[in-house]
Length: 311
Image (cartoon, rainbow, N blue to C red; front, top):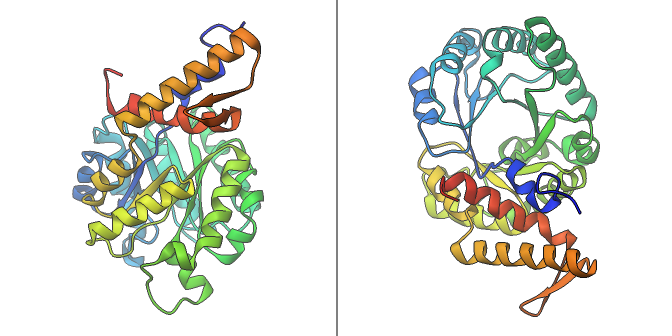
């Protein structure tokens, strides 16, 4: 019988929690400090859409300073370079990772269209890590799916490299790419297919999946509705573009006490059934539960552990 360190039901201790990914422009040290002090699970300092063309090169210096000096209080530390098809990409990676790589957990890769985009970024990151003495593969990748081509290639993108930690659906760029005529409120009605495809591709590859922004960023009720729909659809969390959105999204993606009780009871019943009779399916409150359901319950425990130090 496996010991506790090898018990698959203890895997929740190694699950990354990404209820909220808060993005802010990398040219503003003040905004990055505010993001680092927020309640977000991950902060993304943005050299791409968050920076005007005239600021992109200079913003690297502010980004490096922020990564090397701010207290992130245990958050996942990420940055988004410009797209791989721009003239800025390779210098974004080289300058930022060589100067602050020890304080970077994730690089968010924008406008990913196919698996080769991810592999190119992976190889360049590997060379930089080797050059500066960082552990190869320590800096993970998250891929933004925000075009028709990206959606159609989502499965290959998700399975492209072990360095990939998640897929993120990007509604604003996707809407522009397909010719949407206006910012939409009903994302889940109009964009159900690309969202569902992104979720399925991520789950098939065993990685996280994050939903897009709420374009009406001052409308917190809309943000909450979008977050609840994202949670129902299977997303692990949601992208935020304003600190006020973070508590709303966190609340939606944080399990209630009743959900935690359910998770504990299901996992204990499953463990007991396996140990005593080798049964791989159990009945919980007249509901059939098997191994396929366990990841959901394990993630609830991972979130509880992050939000409650006493858990």
